[in-house]
Image 1 (cartoon, rainbow, N blue to C red):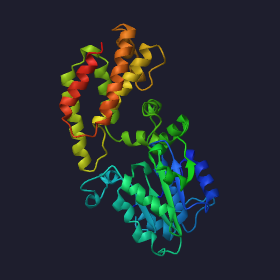
Image 2 (tube, one colour):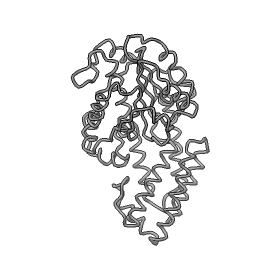
Image 3 (tube, rainbow, N blue to C red):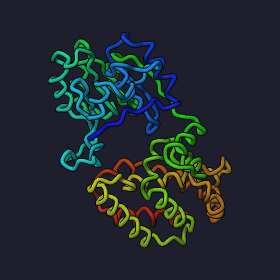
Length: 357
């Protein structure tokens, strides 16, 4: 399977330059970046720069030398990537998809590094290890990695990426040189999407709805996510008149269809966690309008419907109900990965929603 060498994203140019100026100051770098804003791409750019034999004047990989060719062929002997195996379920090579995908980086993955880092570099240069998202290291894996970072192997660079630094062991953080990779400004994100995907006049709305997560928007745009989100919002706009049981039946099917498509290698568009997130966002917008505390953030197109709903019950009573239900949705979100009966779960949530008005 080929692996393209990414160009440094425009909003990461300064971070890339700062890292290059710090080269040789540390054996491990911790990059903190908002989720789905290109942090993974930046890590790969770092690795390619290190392993490239003839980087350009901006220190980015040339894409043509022997080192770059090995990276592109996913066969560089001095290069390892540690990430949850759930990331590989859509691998284009079916044989390499994990049988039991995990959302965590395991101790076995960390231990497997020994075969590389404890030997002489195959190509006589540095060895590079990427770990992302670093906060998905389980407890045993984190402790095993800590031992490696405390007694780092020679000629080896570690690059860790996280968007939730609070979940990392403080001792791991202390062993790394920390860099911040910012999210793009709205204009930069729109330019990127217009250039790399297609010119669309609703990129701004999608970016606002996904909290500026430009890579997430790009990936979701290849699925039916935004179409389903619009259908969902249109049903919620009916308030107490929403057919909760019918809505549960429809979205239970969408979730099951998405799970089947994922098994065949397609990106996952919707699951229970996504539906609960949509509910949380709808309640957020409804609360803002009911309290006259701001405009709709996630469902701007549905502001007229949200305004009508906010007027269907006394404001103080509705705000109290929305607050309590938002707290309940937080609890529901924590359980979203558990294998419960999705249909019954959806029915319960949608019936609770209709009872708000």
